[in-house]
Image: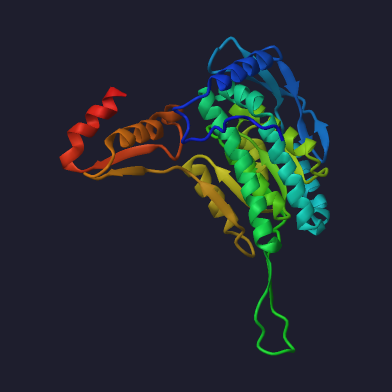
Length: 343
């Protein structure tokens, strides 16, 4: 893994390094020189193409055609699930230490490709450079954290106390099967790579569908898993509309669990779907938030103002973690508001 002299996190957004700006600008020049390519889906270790494509236009420049992506259909979603199901027994039986090694390699590739991925994300989503690179760095950190937890907990296999010498009592965490990841546009790397990495390291196989607005970063994540050596069928990437590809994945009987980030209505419909059948299937749904910040009369008002500003207005407020209301002590209200407005 390449070593940078700095690490971008959400707590360091106000102190960029001049070298960071230089390297980011160079990355932007590289990716702009390669705009307009057509990218495939990735199913069972192979590139797949649909009969139709859709075009990604940058919100930064409406004349900028970033890339073309496959307009997948039900057949592609079904093929991706079938590939993941077929690959599951082998991946489940792969020693967890080997899975950890592969996922750590994927995290290292993400870190190595930080600037190019961040540049594309900035142009694709409209994030500023620090927010984009923070998203990428967080993804690698989330994957490494899952790997660390597997090691710290011995693959989640524990010898437990037994009542008698004739009993053998052990706690073992087993994977579910095929896990779907449907990611949003606002954190297209962290909320795709984090859930995918966690599912993979635990022994599940993955079918990943990004938001159509962020198919480019979805493809870049796919190449990191592919280049790390994740076996064919273990990680699958499909693109297309939510009502076609997304709904087919959600409704598929072979999907054992799902992580979804998006709207309340869609998330609740998925939750209802996953509670039906012979047994409820796990459903992790992030559908928004109404997040308060509490400021006491003993708070550091300068830090509080900066924190609120970043939380409320970072990515133009288009995130579930954005501060949406402030509860401030009356004794410091005027002073706090003055500091916030001055920013």
